[in-house]
Image (cartoon, rainbow, N blue to C red; front, side, top):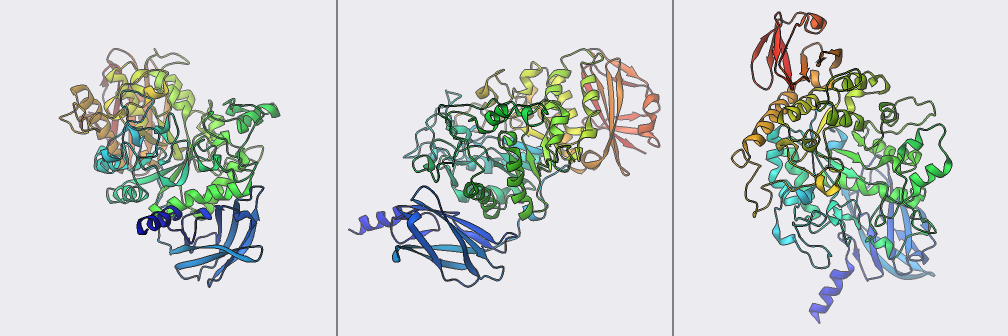
Length: 615
């Protein structure tokens, strides 16, 4: 009898929410904090006939401002106002139905702690390391298979789970810091109990729960703490466009308009240009916004005000719970962009200094710049995104070093691209990358040519904006061209069964160490190179396969010379005097070699010189 009663109590409890009986199945967020900029809190209460109930609270400083009922009788949304003078503690919520007591629960309000998002977010001075937990390192083999979860570990199939987890990430935080990165972005970690492809976790089935195959909520907090101890900022991946078909909403939808639904399945047209096209048709914009990203990812309708508030509170909860430093927003333009702008503003209002980078995968600099906050767009649109991702530069980086220089190709791509930087309100707050988890590996793009590879690394780590390094790029990890799963190979050494450990110099091949050491030297230099953070940029038209640009401020000048020819070149520096001015010598950052700026400079074919100019 005692065992049965214990099981009943456990099954009725939802984290910090202590229900008296099983009528309440979900009460979210799990808790909240006193002293938030926005004193309003929405409680989503789900359970049998909860929509027929009225909530009552008697707690000093807390008042119910409204109660919203939907067309689903099992949902009640209770809105509270929490006065800043409210004391931390546990309040009791009583629910009555037809004037009679129906059920009750307890809810905790915590004292707010100062967090990094409030004071020190990521930005131009940082280098971001991106990883997918499932493909990085397996720190806890005991959670490879979890009862009640459909997929276990099968490393022989690129589309299935491989067993990496948060414990594995925590164990490698010192490695990431030693590489020279100063921020960490991990792809989503929320519960994702889908039948197929659950490893990427972009199809959430519970927003307030770390998937147990990745770890626990406390493990994520431990990761944040470890990052901060080792000088890293933690970036949370935000997905406002869709959830997963395995979400508990699918069994009991909160409202008829919770998802975008069609008479028959309709996928997105993925043509984000429709938002900036002055000639775009309404039907194209509708299918872009309301079409589903994938058949197993119900498209969220942010026009529903309860969903809009619920989802914004999800990410605020994680920022407060773990001490997250910044946000990355997935598939921003797949939403109604005006609603997406309001969604982002919720975070800006709560954390005025937070940096948020948006994934706006469009194909021209003008389109990318349209999505950076403060751009004074002709149509009046303001995304509220402080930072955006430069997908066009990625295209040029993957192509330029395979081409012979001409008016439009080779390094002329960079010249033409940077010449359009006038479009950006803040070009230093643009995220640059060679590759990520959604695109082809840079190693494949340059056909595993180490010289071309390091040219890309040099450009990435010295150009305007800030760099993102995708896990494995530091060892030129391989990939499969044109294949999603081919971008997501396991990091060698992250599993006990691996034959070698590329997290160590001894476990890397000579080729891998050459790439790793080159990248590390530039990343370590970049940490303190203020000219590469917010310095101005000056570039020179490429001639004869030679492209030169400089980053500079009042205290430092870094000059980058690229030889895109196959053969060595000697170049005169006379043309570039306006850059080095009073400087007479330079130190090449990756080799330590000294160069006199008054002489001809010899530069090997397919290489870059990164010169730190000295008086």
